[in-house]
Length: 425
Image (cartoon, rainbow, N blue to C red; front, side, top):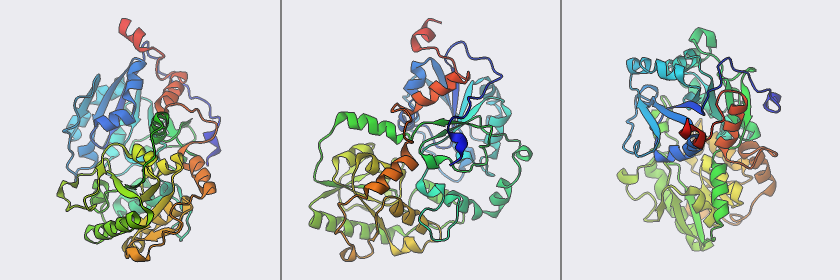
């Protein structure tokens, strides 16, 4: 980990601290929904008198996908601006320049041909900008599981699958009209990965993964445990991000994967006495799929609750696997032979199992899967996972955005006004 992550000096800003709480612009590459409203804890901003605008650049950054904005309404006290082309992006020049801070959810710290125009607009605005790099996939922080894949994670290898983007991303930032981020927000120790838009001048803010906020809330409710096993769905074969990746094959054929998944669920229920429920992927639309889970209950919007109520977690690869670690639940990491023959995804699944201290369980033939240690936990692996990918010891047991906003106020980027003072101003 970069040692600068600890004890880094708070950067000064040439801008005058806003008299009120300030104005923050979130630049997002997927449509803003009530879920992302909650994930980004917009009420925490509003409570401090900070105005919030969302700039939705999905159509520019991911032009091959259809973006459903039917849920992008009914979120109080924020403005959502959709830009669909270069002209409408240029029209938001004044918005970006007047803001006190830009939170960049585009590109995860890496410029590409698709996101370059958006990143250039952010950098040219002169407004301080922050990159969240806390909810890092374990496999994006290097390869702890071996296998010769090298350092840099799947993100880098996906870029190398597109030669034009590979060449583009190697150009110096100044030639691209870009500058390094003013702030980067970290979670666990290994979220400090090399990023093109982060350098020695970038101030590191230590927080935790945003799912830790959910963990705090659900833990306070202390729900009862049921005789259930929860499958954390990854929408395999249908995930829109996977479909948007050029020159990258699907990890497995859904027509092969889902029947074997159902057969494995049958065996878990029969031999372990646990009813399998499905924690739906937040971006999944199961309407076009032919009963992928065999009529089992699918629960939307409550993955953490599903995990804390369960006795066993059935997983592939997902950031939500961190809930199993936080709540201390055993995990079975599943894969097929097709997945493990994939040049990219085999390492994703192997890394997930390795980091959780679990063997990889093949579900091609459910009768061959070894369930003898399904209910065991490698406590050492869980402790390391917690520190590496969830929360660095000694950081505040506080909500993510409260930690970040306190640091931004200390840096003079945002004002310290409360909602009450903002109302009377």
